[in-house]
Image (cartoon, rainbow, N blue to C red; front, side):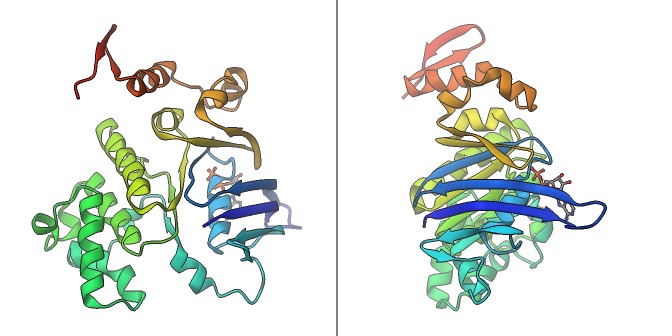
Length: 273
Ligand code: ADP
């Protein structure tokens, strides 16, 4: 699914003394199947932007066109849009509520009116994609799990609905480095397997350097940079000035990995096959 954002402006509490322009004339086009990272400092407008993409927020002005349909029009069925655009909120684990993991992941696909067989197939696939063994975990309570595991259950619940677009708001927030790397690798793998247009929101340049194909940088409600990581990282001064310093070593690691090498301490070695 493609997404076209045209002249999008969002003003909170418009007209009041605390009026806040959170999005300031955003124009973007995201193509079907793209993997996009949206990055910006806290308060730059990332959450506001993604909440427009499935109709949770309405623009003050501007349009959002999803596969040719303007979803900001009054008579658009948001339930249909939300089936196609899956949004994983920040700290999604707080929304787990069923008594077992399997039931929790079944919830979304069941609401789509699928057969039991199809639901079961999707739950198994989604669990395996996020690295949770079906037999081992299906009957466990979500509350028995670690933070990172709970988050994976929550992501699997959205993935099992097989949306055409998957949006994840800060999926690595609050996880330790190992948990972060695992989630990022799984999101990348999900994109490959399901071929969904994927938008991952982050405020960490380290995450971006590890996985992004296309990076969109937001600052004060404006899209200030848009491109491949290699080009984005050239704007070191600008990135630093908006609080997004790039850890160069992370970028070097990625560049080496692409060529089959890895950095170990101060040595560069050949990666095992
Ligand atoms: P980010 O996700 O990048 O941290 P947000 O989209 O949450 O940024 O916020 C963008 C700006 O809008 C910030 O200045 C924030 O304080 C403001 N904002 C966000 N939500 C609201 C709200 N519900 N009411 C008023 N202002 C808000």
